[in-house]
Amino acid sequence: MNTAAGRHALRGATLLEALIALAVLGLALLGMLWGQLRTLASSSDSLRRSQAILLIDDLTERMRANPGPLAQLENFRSDWGTTADDSVDCASRWCDATALARWDLARWRQAVYRQLPSGGAAVYRLQGDSSKAGTRLGVMIGWRAAGAAPPVAAPNPMQEPGRPDCPQGWTCHYAVVQP
Image (cartoon, rainbow, N blue to C red; front, side, top):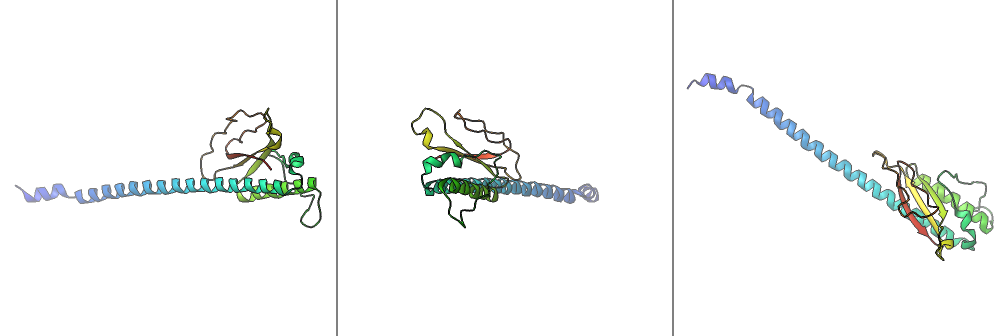
């Protein structure tokens, strides 16, 4: 057997093997990076949902702290596009129950905007024939998920009258509160 011809045939095979090994290593690293990004996105969504739950609890406590909360339910209502009313400052002067409810709602909406990316909220009175429907409010908090494809807007899955839909491209959390 001719050893010189055998060596000539193997020339470059080591380089080809090294390139294939680098390509496999690169694909493995890309797979690991993709998994890390998905984990980060999932934990970010969990954080936003936890913040939304805490914000809903905050609104409920603000409602309960208001004197005569059931009489003030209409003053806690707001829609997605409603801006915070800064005309009253109950921190520096005394306010009646109506002004306090508006002031609390304005502070709460500001907290929603600060804590959630492009956050917003809708607070609405529940409708229906239930005896408790007049004493409860529905709260929907939404945010845009950063770095992810926008989800399809969630329609009203329970078909509740008066319940707003989650805006297109937002992730929303819904709760019912009763002062």
